[in-house]
Image 1 (cartoon, rainbow, N blue to C red):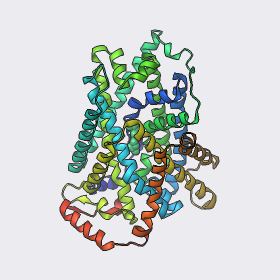
Image 2 (image 1 turned 45 degrees about the vertical axis):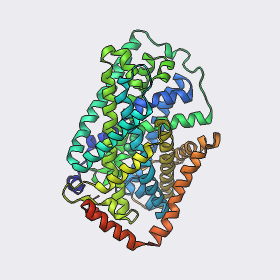
Image 3 (image 1 turned 180 degrees about the vertical axis):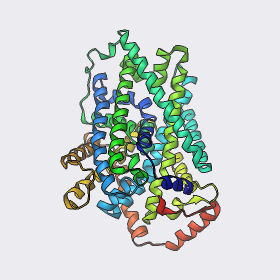
Image 4 (image 1 turned 60 degrees about the vertical axis):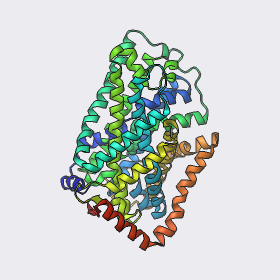
Length: 469
Ligand code: ARG
């Protein structure tokens, strides 16, 4: 990690291209190969499902403009954590870090790894859904493999990232071309009466949003590393706009292609959409789509592991994380404590989790904090007019998107109260309870210090130069 940080910060040269791929590479992962059927299932009709996919993009673009302003006003790396810390204070920032380390990041890892596993095993079960246990076993294997790879060598994991990025864009391009050819042949049954059976229930829309937004998640990735970006005031807004519009366009066309090739019924009953698509369009070469979707998820998983250490570093710098989680291996210079910790929690989340549920809770929690972050921007715009703003959005924008974020967080709960959302909310709030004794009053510092020293010797890790993060 140390080496990586040195390398990244010495160069301090993530240019526009790098920035676009940092965002796009994280956004495209598992969702576009997994969520189309859940979006369709909850919203009811092909037409409305395409509208949902477009709306997700149209929501993320203005939110990202707000993040562009935040990223150029608060210049530190660290994304939501640092914005919330500077606007809403340490307790809320700690709640974010706590939820992110214990739940959001592991949930992200599990969601992506389940998609990977689904696509790896799909070709072996052509006629039926694969057994859950087999899928989970493969998902666990993927998580452990990537944790090991990332603990061994930082450079290797960085170079695989580029390879996976190329594979997934190619895979999406193949799907789009296949769709165009199918449509050109006049096959368009799915689009006749395409809004029939649309379900306009609040809960249905909320769930469709959660599922769609999962595929778009990662749009905020560049805000985690703004300190390493060349000319952030120009490149941050530009990279966000280019990457998100590109991904939105690709996702829409891929969905049109899925629907051109499959009837809504076929789409809903498929256990892996891209495989069904591949079998119908590519015939005996259909398995290629399975490989491509698996690689896409694997790349996203690798990226999530790779960038995951950052929030830990920034939070440890503020005294919000046990120091051990921000240390790096003395020889390999990889953030092994944070990796081991995340792996263990991810495996625990994997045991009960299924893709759909995990994605719903992931989006619920993530958008809760995006909402707080947007609230922070509104606060800065009203109270801190004096701050230099190289890039500024009209104040109605954060207001509008904040309303949508509130809808997203509250709608599914109000419409169809489920006890699990209460658990998640209680869990987020429990961060505040932990904050008071352990961070504010620093009780048991001796215990923590002893544990840190023990783990440091055991794992052969040492503090990194946190100024560089
Ligand atoms: N959009 C990604 C996908 O479709 C998931 C991203 C999870 N979030 C993250 N920050 N890595 O698989």
